[in-house]
Image 1 (cartoon, rainbow, N blue to C red):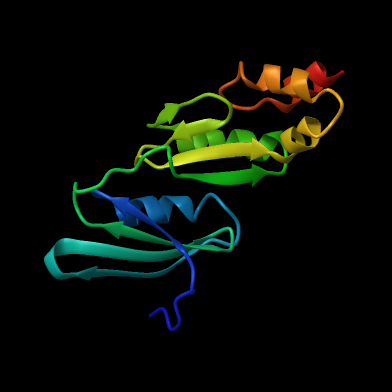
Image 2: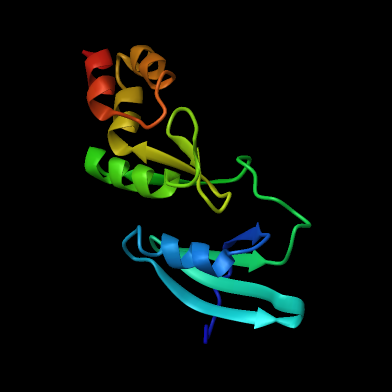
Length: 149
């Protein structure tokens, strides 16, 4: 039982499979866990979870609302290995977008952003780095560094 819910958390509305999505996501990021999951009147499912130390609430309550890329979960990846791992797992059964964006099999939009991209975008060759990034789906750090060279 979640004793004291966080004061602030993001709630995502799912048509179905909210618990399944939560169980999948907590396997991908350190410091992640399902805090509580319950079913209330009419089959509504509420999942309280923590992803990388950030609280979320997933509400499975039918087709009244849909997930959209207008709200996404952005992950700052430490290196190319983490970027590749998250990209491969989250895009499996989903849809790859441009510039590090994807929509997973549950309809949740993600941005997988390598830390190195942010560093390069703050450097003297930021324009060349952005131009290279705009051609990518998954962000490739080596290609960004080559653009900056």
